[in-house]
Image (cartoon, rainbow, N blue to C red; front, side, top):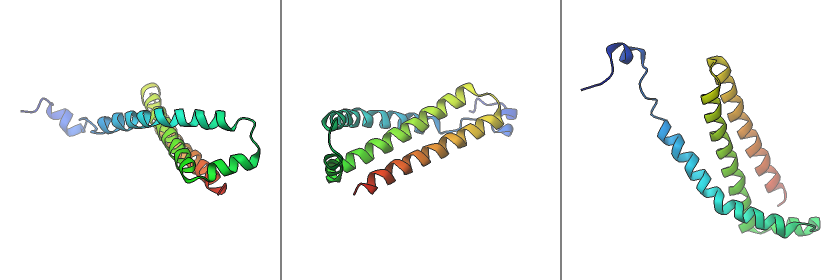
Length: 123
C-alpha cells in the first residue's frame, strides 16, 4: 500500500534517495578529519620557524605527503558537502540554487586540484 496520492506519483515528488548517502559522506569525512586535523596541528607546530629545506624534506617523506593529501581531500569534500546543505536550505530560487551548487562543486574541484598539485610539486 502506497501512501502517495496519484498526483504526487505523477509529478515525481517522491524521495530523492540521496539524503542518506549525503549524510554518511559528511559524517565519514568529519570522522576522517579528526585524526588528520590532529596530525596537521602537529605538522604546523613542528614546522613553525623551519627553513624551507626542512619543510620540503618533511613533505617528501611518503607518510607525511599521504597524510597531507588525505587531509586536503577530506577537508575539500567536507567543505563542498557543507556548502551544499547551506545552499539547499537557504537559497529558494531554483536557478540561483543550481548555479550556486555548480559553483560550489567547481570551486571544490579547483581548490582540491590546486592543493594536490602544490603538494606533489614539492616532490
